[in-house]
Image (cartoon, rainbow, N blue to C red):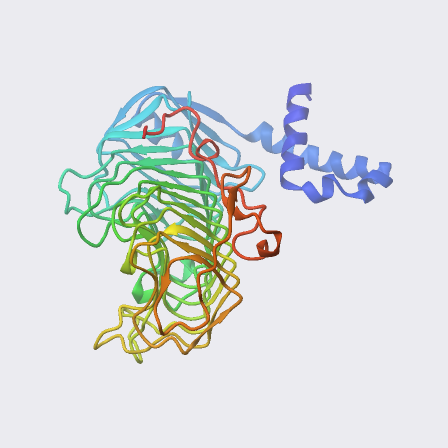
Length: 483
């Protein structure tokens, strides 16, 4: 076997069997190590020997070779413009031998005109493409399903750009990305400039095969999206009201949302069991909204409004939501756009309205230089059910000094306020025990503000919180928009 191929196989072994490759047992048993690693080398070398690589220069050549792809096969798309390209890939790859579609050079394969990508099968990898100067003829630009019967599983789209690939009619809706199936990953992609109606990225739960999906959405750059002026401009939506009682179990982690002003819900969580962790919201109008569904976790996210109008934080609805260790600064939104908004609910609410907030845990968040926190928001003749059995614990809070910083629009007796520290701002009279007491703040190496007084260090976001950087998301070979 050639030396270069041996190294490749060893790298694959370490990637897919990290615990085994690093185990003490393998280290302590040389003969066993030789047998195990030799067997893996043999299996992977057989796969490598049987795998085929195709270089294609047009849609006809692609169609001809893609019909019979096997595990480990790779199709390389030639650099240049692929206009009106219906890119479809499916097949049975394997974890150690995915079916791969890649650009000859990253960023040099341009899908233009009426183009789209559909993925079915298992263990499919697509990378290096750019969608620009056109729009999808379908309801999605990228779909993790070939059709309703062929959903993607264990598949990945990485280092792909969608730039301004919007339908000409603003009211003609589509998704840029539709996630279906299970165990798929969408990472290190660059999506910017959606101007027509429809969610930028939607996780669909409209079939049993797409629930409890374990999808991972991470390290993506979601760039500027102008305000749509109506509902339907979310950047991410997970589920819908119809399927909101189902668990999605989707992880949204380490993404950047830069000026994603499409509508009031930057992220619309409409299902249960999701995790929103370590994302950066940068000058983004709107809020991360737990709109439907129970038992979601929002932790260690950073919201930097830089004083921009309508920049918000987190809005809480439904049951058993946990919001902890988040950092918010310079947010100027009020009402539903506020830094923290706990909604009133509808008694015996139907799925598409507002389920009462119950058992919410709001712990150790920092909210500084921000305009509004509201409890019982939206109370009216329909939304009559105030939050119950909820607690607000060890948060560090500081307003702008203009207007009422902490507002109560309804009964707050169902909320316990425990060991919170208010540094600045006025408080509604219904909220007892919160009185401003100034304390000096200093900006640490992570760029965030913390109390100088060490006795307050257990209040607010933790010291080890590191905002996700622009450099760590998206692709390195395609420029991000300027200020």
